[in-house]
Image 1: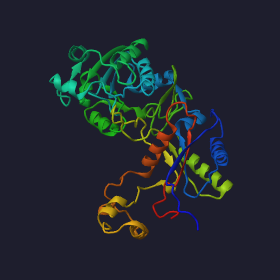
Image 2: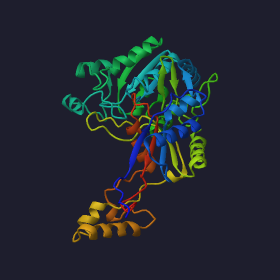
Image 3: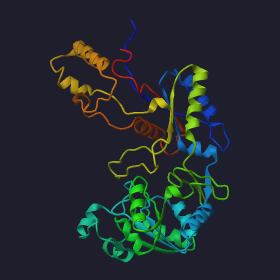
Image 4: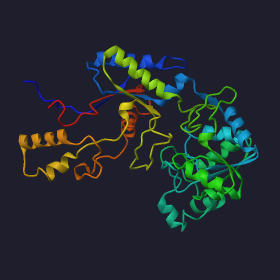
Length: 400
């Protein structure tokens, strides 16, 4: 008699070669997964998931741009005089290089920071500092002098950087005058300039529309480098959003045209194994650090492209609800069989509103799986930019 399966979902980081611009990434991804399967003794199965980090996709595409390219685009769109930078995130890797390019395209830069933290949770201040100072973050506007009087020097918990001074230095070194203000009202920036780049990520449409309604000449970061400048890389949908620092003078943009790539990986794997796997490109996961309060999701989306089988949300029953309620009088094999039957009988349509699904995560599959990929690959020296996930679509009945 075949033993019951005892393993559910497995996420594996796949070690790969160092990918370079121009590489046939789809072929190399499939080859790396198949070599790992042979080396570690696992099979490729239908509905396995292969995730590829956005970084290597953009690298192989050669989707790079220089700070000079950013500067030219900013100058052309905003006039080259005083520009306002609204609500950038606090990041050496993500934003500092973009700020350098923006400052090179202007004579003066007014950076308006949100407080007590940025959009993705990087803290300038603690909420206790703000409350103790008698400040209302919803209405009060601070200049840098008042900020320093009230709060002094505040360094980021993890990086040790005073971002107020750091961003000021970047602007000055780029040849522009720098001014920092603190406000959670987008219209505050119009007291300084009518030419604005709103740098918020997930609230960008609301911010941009409000400033436009007030007469501002405003572009989102998704509208800077949304087309090539002097033959540069670009992203027509996301512009500079999702950018990472490559060198001191060059950025790697979020990858573009990813749908043909994921479809190609799926097709190659089907040809070589006969199995129908699902494929996605993933960036930052969507999860919040309980200590640092950082939300992580600095990319515009978790997954810019994925195969059809990754559409939708989980449609799952909560086993502990069934065990504690409908089948509270059952134990052992009788309980197991009752729960297996409930899973087999669940409707194909969404279980939203059904008490038996209460507490299951109502998030898109791509956000959940992309976050799992991001956590598995990490952001350091693991050398696993490709993730193989098995058993994600299984349930308690699979292999029993």
